[in-house]
Length: 276
Ligand code: C2E
Ligand code: MG
Ligand code: MG
Ligand code: MG
Image (cartoon, rainbow, N blue to C red; front, side, top):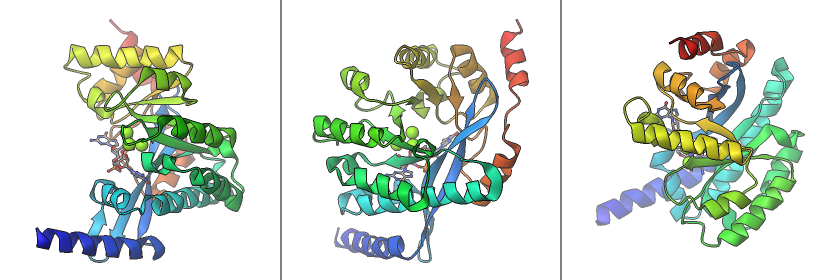
């Protein structure tokens, strides 16, 4: 137990250092319009390139950062890094790319996040609609009414909002109705079962219908196979994201995809869905 505590403290202190010493890096995963095959936006996913531990994924440090009160610093770093990247892609002639960043529910515990978003946009002169915030509904939002008020203030800045991991955890429909989000991200656990579970298919179909009724775009996460993509097209999903299109990649690798813009051949999918 003592050993575990010590190694955790070490991780924590290394992480504090990492934030201020450029050891964090963003990878980007394309989000593709199913009907056109066009890359319409990307999700930024943080990694920690640690000299001591190697490349670490968020599952290995985000919850620690939440527990020790470092999550707002990460949030700020991610937001600034994403805005800097948006500007540098624009300057490199790729137009204004929309980047979605993940926001920890804990960041919605104080309205300081509103200024962080506004500052990040202003620092790089980014049009607000190029920045999307992905928010997960969880019970760790201790004061949902206050969180909703903060979300509305962020929304008023003109940024785009998405609900992440929809369908698992705490998804309150009354809350959803009042949540000013443009996108509903269907959790990958349902996508995983699409090709073999009638239940998962029914749940995904229902979430897509729900999104449509609320004038939101349905984005399916974690699409790994062509078959899953075809079923999603059939069910009327707007967007997909997942290894089948691309894994999260470095900004340089993403640039290659941005230059080709169309990353999927929609005709291939359409033809396959419409044929008997
Ligand atoms: P998320 O926001 O739901 O992100 C999707 C996760 O699924 C990413 O894992 C992504 O790499 C992975 N993924 C994408 N496509 C596929 C697929 O086809 N199959 C499978 N099996 N996985 C796929 P990652 O990058 O390890 O991130 C895990 C979680 O960590 C994220 O889940 C998000 O909740 C959190 N996270 C990532 N970056 C940040 C950040 O900057 N700030 C905060 N607060 N949380 C972050
Ligand atoms: Mg996300
Ligand atoms: Mg999430
Ligand atoms: Mg997710």
